[in-house]
Structure formats: C-alpha cells, structure tokens
Length: 401
Figure (spheres, one colour):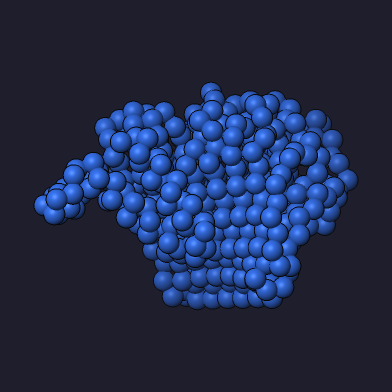
C-alpha cells in the first residue's frame, strides 16, 4: 500500500507531466474510498499540488488543524514572488536567490500534504543559505510578508566538514505556506533555529525537510510564540551512517491560538541517533497545541538509538493539548527506542515550595513556567538567542498574568 513508488513525482525542474489526464494520484495510491494509511511511513507524497485531493477534516494529517482558517493556502493560487529579507552573515556563509531548476532544490524531501505541494508548485525562486568552513553563521529575518496568500521555498545547504548556525526569524503579519529543505553533507555540523514570532493574525503552514549525510550532526530548534495558526512540521531523514539529530521545540499558546507540530524522524541508515524534545505552555480559553511525533526505524537502521518526548503545561482551564507519540520499528537490532508524552497542570508542591519562601503566587507561577520551558531553551547553545527567548517568554507571561 506504500504510496512512494507510484506517487512520487520528479522535482519541478524536470519535464512537466499533464496531471489533468491522470486524475488524483493520491486517490489511486490510497486516498478517500481506499483503505486508510496505517503508518506514517506510508503517507502519500508528490511535488505537484494537482496530485492531491481537496483537504478534509477527516484526513489524518489535517484532523487537528482549524481548516476554516487556512483552507485558502491549500486551494488558491499563491504569490510565489521573492520577498524582502534581512540577512546578517558571519564567516563562510552566503545567501542567494536561485531559480527553480537549481540542483539543490528537491534533495531533502517531498511534500506530503496539499498546502506544501501548493507552495512547491508556485514559488518563483528559492532562497538558498550556504554554510561552508568553520563557525559560519547566517541570520535571515522576514518582517514584511503582508496579508496576501504567499508561497516560499528555502534551502539550507551545509557543505561537507562545515560547521555553522542558521537562524530564521519570522515577524509581522503573514498568510504563508512554505517548504524548507536542510541538506547536510558528510561530517557537517549544523544548528538551525526557526523562530515563529508572528503577529496575532498570522497564518503559517510550514514543512521542513532535513536530510543528513554520513556522520553529520543537526541540531534543529523550532520556537513558536506568536500567530493565529502556526503549523511547523519537520521531517528528518538520517540517510547516512552515524548521522545524529537533536530536535527541539518550544511554544507558548495563547487564548484562541493554534500551534501544531507533526514531527517525523526516519532512521534510514545504520548506527544513527535521534533525540526529540518538545515542550509547551498553554494559557487561555481555546488555546490549542498539537504534537504528533513519528519515529521510523527502517530495515537498514540497525544500531539505532532514538527517543522522543512531548511535555505540555496547562496554565488555565479551557486550554487543550493533543499529544500523540508513535514508534515504528522494522528491525530488532537496535540500541534503544522509546517515547513519552505528558500534559498536566501546575505542580501544587512546586508552588507551595516557592510560596513558603515568600514568593507571591503570580511570581511563583512565572518561575515554574520559565523553568519548564527553559530546559529546552538552554539546549540551543547560542547565548544571544537563549537570552532573546528568555525575554520573549517573560513577555508572554507578563501579558497573560
């Protein structure tokens, strides 16, 4: 029932196919009316939006998402023109706009939902961030995407033996569907930090694809602190032997806000390592977080060491956290694999301990939240970003006090 053989299409730079004569490839590969997909690894994928059926709330990949707010990003033509970015470069880092036929596009992953395919089908040029040499750093900031429905495509390319950091900052209003590709060549060591600090009205659907070469190491951090609907789904393939991925997420969900992450880690080579930790705090009526964590240890993934976890702190009544960890193992020759999920309210004993030492209740609650989220923030390893996030979280707590 696997869709990948019959449904996967060539990148946009290849010879185009007349999809109007083919009907829905998603349907023919296991869509509506056919037996449902049983595992994350069988999900349909294609570069062409015409291969996907219209999205429905009953679809596994959309069941938690408020479709009424983001449906336009799956159905309507998107503005794929280039946009203003602010860049700060240090060391051997570069940023360039490239055409769709650039060889680096389409090497990390394939869209698995209609919004991602819509973005892939409509972007004009891709923004490519290249890291080479040691201690390179690139900061790319977007603040003026506007209120029109837009597509974007970004590629981060870490060359062999390189070591660097890429920080992607998102601010202001946006109605955006985008794809991000992260490609690590052999022995590369890369940290990628994606900051979603959107305005309250922003709608953001993002698919992040990472492909790790032999003995490469990726530290991936997703931070979501703003926006109306923010959905950032990373798919990370450990394609080379001894590849290593640390995957972190931190989020603060306000009243009426929806923040979603669907994480997929694919151990496709031997002796690979992945550790996934997402932590979020929710406060206010209608605050909703979704975390779905899927780990696949393939037949070639012998010697795998993998662990994933999600923790949610519910600060008020009316907040909801959906958390679904999944583990799929196709070989018994592994070092270890596990997952954990927990959502709960404040620990009364922690609050009592702090209040017994003269700390007012409101301040005690803020300290508990800062400590809870700070465990992930401290994993970033970039002091200025950690300080910025500490201040941003403190601001969230102050607003919601």
